[in-house]
Amino acid sequence: MVDDECSNLTCSDVEDNVKHTLTSKTRSMSHDSLRVSHHDDEEECRRRSSNDSSDDDDSHCEDDGSDDDDSAETIALFGVDGRTGHHFLRLALDAGYKVRALVTPTTKLEGQAEFEDLHTVFGTVNEHAKIQEVVYSSTYVVCMVGETALANATQSSGGGYPKEYMLQFVKTLFRVMGKQDDPPIKGFLFQATSLAKNQWGELPALSAHIRNYWIRRRTLQYLQDLDGVIQYIHSQSWGADADDDKVAFPYIITRPTSFLRDGRSTKKLQASKSQPGFFPYCNADLAEFTLNALKMPKLYNTCRYVVGDGC
Image (cartoon, rainbow, N blue to C red):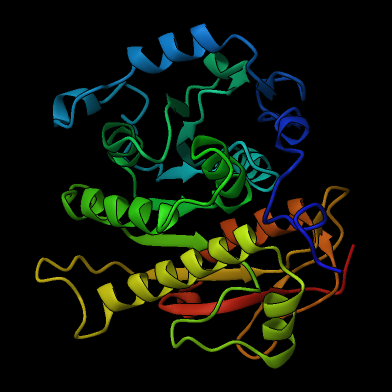
């Protein structure tokens, strides 16, 4: 049975997951120098968040000096505190990317000061100014907040899933991306789940059965929110339903399995446009696939499953 506790959709154990160690770049750091951990001091979290940009103007997104090298591309990362996100961060830094990451107020990245190519912004997906600062000067935008979105949204709303929580975030994100033209956004990647519908509202029969009969109500509300996000992303790039001030970006929507687990990277994953894979695979493998996808032209403007043979 697929329920909130066994699916990566719920992240009921987010507090444990954010404690995973991120391997640092081998050229200068030990493997334990960068760590995602839970932040227990709520007052300090609020102080650190308030010290970041609090207004919606570009003056709070000034270059911090880490983006002087035009040869290095920059990734704006949303979801670094998730199971897959922390692997993605490590791989992106290892590959030579500069990363601007949104870190939720309840977590922190220990050892981040040692990474010249990492700029962190403490905030939430509800804060326009923080989203703006993360996206500033980025060439790619990667959104994999689904693992923690359900937990964070239900906590902030007192137990229920807020209507269009993710959709409102993505709409804000698109408005921010639309205002940036130097450098232009080369690609936007949104990680959904295999239980979300594609851009045409379609879902394989077995996935639809699992979704309709084996999923709890608030998780179903989350999946319906993802459906809206996927349709919105597609409409902004292709359809007549696009806003008058439509901002079109090359996009990739991935729908990985809900059965993700930690462990050693052992499999090469691939995209599938027909059927989801039901074998579990590792978060590290998904992170590697996601990073590589940014350089795969054939994946742009598609909504593909991510499949593998397991770990």
